[in-house]
Length: 367
Image (cartoon, rainbow, N blue to C red; front, side):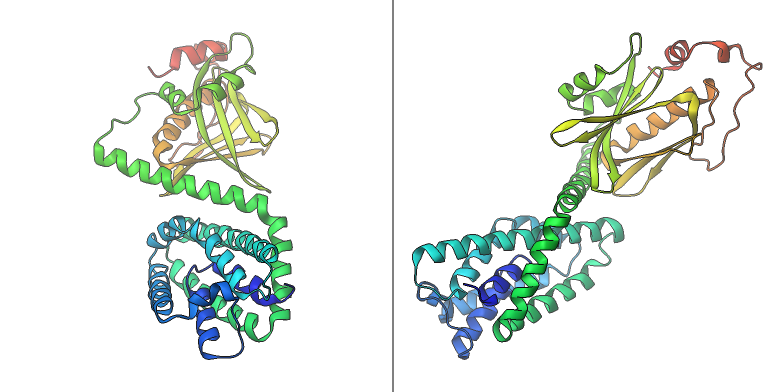
């Protein structure tokens, strides 16, 4: 069980479901380099080779088309760990049932880890390059699978070392990878939801208050407990804030006095930051295609960025319009989509600027 053959084949099964099994069966059928476990000798039959060959060719072709490759990866989320378990069980040199079961469990786990890394890379490529880099990435994956299979057969100890390096690296990047994978999945599904709304002619939100309906009620209720007495909740933006550990879910509570930023933490209370409207120097909304982004810059050079699903883009735009209005009236500086900084108004030019932020917010709230 210490040979690199079963673990190498399990690892690459997380990248391509059928090609490693097909290559393993070919080596067992036509060479003496590989001997399959007796319980998996059916893989070298004519029927199994034909089916595996067709499935491998289908997967190789499907992975060359942006969009289809992400759907294919999603559909094979459960199949790739199963393929990794079969590859490890077929290649392991043992007749003991317990050892076989342990090998298959470890093989399935390796394949699941490789599938997570591969799917995360694909989704990042899709969101960053709009799928243009996916085809080249697919050719690289095919070459990696073939090369790793050859190493597993002819240099198993080298492959075992590579598997150990992958496992150690995966544990280091696993939190970032999981958060990035979840972020990219939600961005893609948010874009699909936006397309569905457009096709079904679902009306757009008319005011910022409707953003509260898009947030989880229990989370809004919990975060609202941090508001000061007399402070009114005007809207909620739900998105992600990128951190060193990957994108984290984040809530922006737009109140009558400030922006309350709550960054979610696992097993810990949310990290809270407060940004008064009077301290703002830049407020900007950007539509980036698959998703939208709201950017705030405070006078102390503190930057806050929230990434929104495309379906929530209009809410982000409404929020920025309101934030700019409140910042102006509170003596701050706002920057909207015009890419030109708006100078602070002269406090003597308008009696409204002598009003409290609470009264200003009530007066200029969009109904």
